[in-house]
Image 1 (cartoon, rainbow, N blue to C red):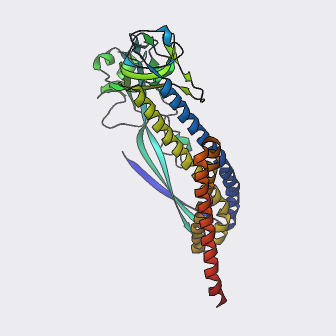
Image 2 (cartoon, rainbow, N blue to C red):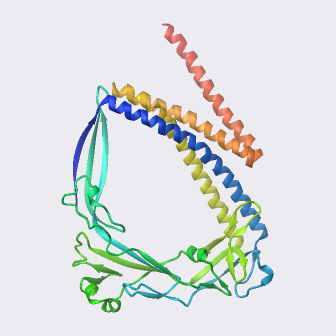
Image 3 (cartoon, rainbow, N blue to C red):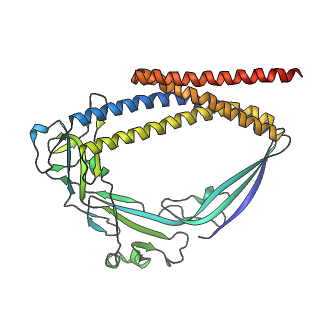
Length: 392
């Protein structure tokens, strides 16, 4: 992969930086406000999902897939078996044909790409110098890269569009024993494998396409030399989702399925590869719910922390007249932002828990209150310690 780069130096004046930092105050306030509904919704969603899965785990009925029993109609059922289809899927352009649940075409084109890296250096007087390095390299990309937006498009021109698009074909009928899978369940079957593009397929291509392409490894290559690709060369690979063992839980609806609506609020439907018991499927779903909940908690905290930090940014920029003073203030404001965001995040979660999980909500409120009191006591101690020193 050949690459080269060049650097550009720009300078931003102190007054201009102050103006820009004032805009960040508005963004910071928005981020700070948005954090609260994100945290609140997350806790409610977590509890609703937990209760729905608990309800599903106690009401699910494991049945055999080889027979449709009308007595189970409308019930949440679990089953394992082979997902099968007789459909043969075909890519009409490149003539690949497979007996599969899904056939996918993946197209990549060799193109110029641009990467930017910036380093900022503060100057005495509040100015800031930015050194931006632009690096250009040729890479395989699965979507068109617009070279007109490059800082230096000359000598890095890319084709305007992809000559062929990614595509996929899904079997019309996929069965699991005596049952037929819905479109959503078919889409959840994820295990895929590579389909080798063969010389026999290449020989059947229309002459115009055949003359400019060749088989290279498992792919179809459009270009003159796969060993030394040029900008605009294309390689096309294929994958398929074969027939195989799956497990699912969903509501039985005749000989097919639909999501099961729980009293707790969530609609339940899940498919996993392989033979998995109902208990294991619900346990894994609960684990995923815990992970998702923590991810959104962290995102909520980051939104709040970033919002508070951005509100203080203009003060640090003003202090950048002496760069080291600005840096010290940023560190201090970072500590303040953490001291504000951490307890407020806990308080928001705790108040939400008072609604959704009352016992845990009270406990978390006590912890959050303890943190706030601790921060205040620490601040008071420092003030008292600083008072005698200032007298001298």
